[in-house]
Image 1 (cartoon, rainbow, N blue to C red):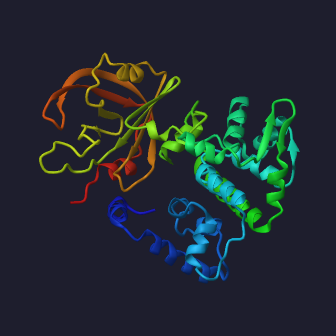
Image 2 (image 1 turned 90 degrees about the vertical axis):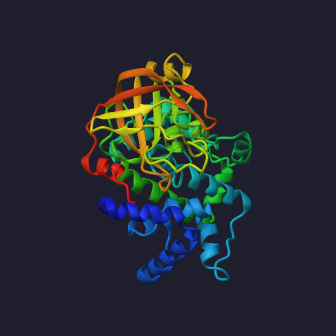
Image 3 (image 1 turned 45 degrees about the horizontal axis):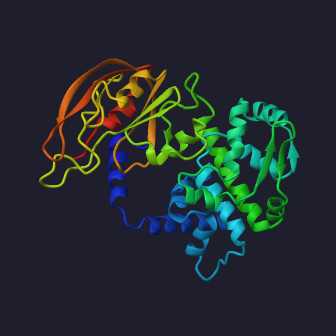
Length: 371
């Protein structure tokens, strides 16, 4: 809701903030006084306070947050298994980029078994959302604790035991999870996660999807969100830097304004000053990774992809990327660039043409630079 200059200053300030938790606490006190009760995550979202995703990024779960802001007053009574489930769900589905996992969880609040057909019909009726058989299977895997990036993380979360699934028998709630739901505090926090996720989905992701993709133009996505929406089966965010090929799709991730280099170096470590920029609202110029010439497998992954997607963030002050849409490669040619050791290395200079002209206010925001 801010103009691009105000937004720029805010993001620059956020990048330097060391006391984010104190800002969250101030927001909590203000909200608590306003509504006259202890707020849930959904209250923060509904009232336009600190984004619940920021709270979870800082504290991992709502109960940890409450123990911190209400020291000596709030004591979590959840057992370790319940805490583990809440940590996983908060990390994985709170963003609301798709409704299927949230809807399945919502159904499990009142029904212990239900068919796939039932889920498909109700999702269509209530949210106008078509869930494929593949997505159904992947959503179940997510709710079984499989959506992790490392094996140690998988070993930790695979014990959450929320549900089982069979294409013929449908969804079945585990007795252990049904028992967890009998605990009023656990039940409240699961409902809170569902409410925030579904509200975010309705507000941000339910409309405007680009044809044949699960993405909405100019909405923001994390690398983790991209992994989820592309049905990767696990969190691939640790490998999604610069370029990532997923099946027939390729994703280019751009930080528009790069960090300044240390003295004596050409580029900030790991972030070379690539010539990545919009020439206008249709043409984007992109440099490949240093060392990746036109004939490299890296560039063949880009050029050979059926669908090519561009995601951009202004600077490292932002954690998520704006989805700019699909593009076609108009030109790709070999060039050279000096690395941090002073050696000339091959790169590929690529000219892209976006399928949709970039929205003017977003383009101005990305291009603006406060000195």
